[in-house]
Image (cartoon, rainbow, N blue to C red; front, side):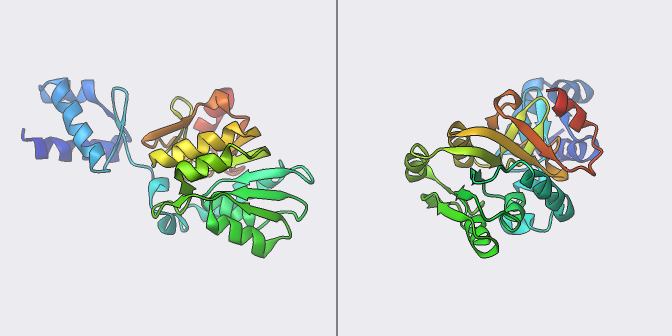
Amino acid sequence: MLSAQRKEHLLALLEAEGRVVAKAVASDLGISEDSIRRDLRELADEGRCIRVYGGALPVPAADAPVAQRLSIATDSKERVARAALALIRPASTLILDAGTTTLAMARMLPGDVTVLTPSPAVALAAMESSRARVIMIGGELSRHSAVVGGALAQEAIARLAADVFFLGATGIHPVHGLTTGELDDAVTKRALAARSADTFVLGSAEKIGAVSRFPVLSLDEITGVVTDPEDDDPLIAQLRTA
């Protein structure tokens, strides 16, 4: 079987089964596991799968550019945003990460809080929808995620402190933890979590069980996961246990 044929086979398995186990596929096809790993590595470099230990997982829908994500699981994101609002204490300082769920939160904020954010969209929404004090974190703006990062952002974050950080990850998995599709974004999220007393990750339906390319934090490094109260995904119980 040619490499191109193997890759199509691997992509079909990802779509049908939601994962690829390199050892099992190599045995089924009668070829070396190294060949399968090489194919998966090349597919991952093309952005068509996510490499994990022992195989690969599909690319999450949440890894799409921010303009495309606005129309994904919108009802679930609204419910998660409302649940997260209940965690905000009066007169607190909070960090709202970039993302479509935090954007929903920004439109519902109480007026007696201070909001720090690396997202221009979140900052504008908070300013237009509430009387909250809004502070932008500066840095280089990513065209993919519309969030600031880089050295300037790291320097600014090091001088901040917050009561709670509402983190937006593109993957939330009971084994692989919190992940995102951009390396710089992962670094920025870790820096923000380090400057916050509590960190909650926002888990709308499309993110539960998903795994993106770059790790952010493990589950034991966060305070909790805010999930959709109408989401009956069995993985939520596993997240609660973890």
